[in-house]
Image 1 (cartoon, one colour):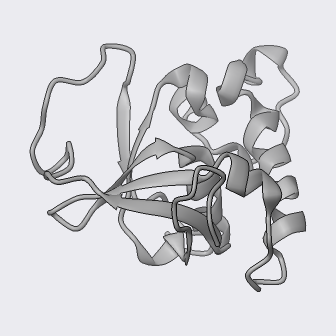
Image 2 (tube, helix red, strand yellow):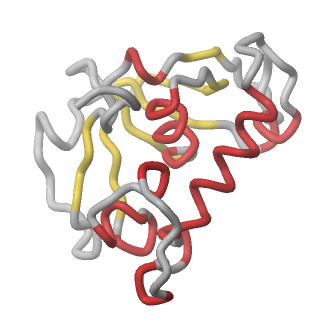
Length: 151
């Protein structure tokens, strides 16, 4: 399948890959609160809901959308993914990072879904294997988030 801008897309199984996730508190509920919204009950305290992409509902709603498109584990033609593909950089160290789509990939990894992605060589080691200065607002790098059912 091709992305809207002509790049080849590949169906990937994120649970079998090692990723470098870079999330700031406003981008990830787990970074903001300590627990992934996909693993806990809806908070009753509004202060625990989070904000922006780190809001409790962000990933739970995205999961519902993704399950509607990916639940069959076939290779569906997903027009939205073609317009806004998951863009992954393949690093020399064997890890993968993102130019776009890290939320979808993190959710897919945690829930065992397969997703379409454009994978391009990054041409270097990842930030974990070859650390470089990070943005001040990025507090956590997550590699391979826990898969549902694993500890």
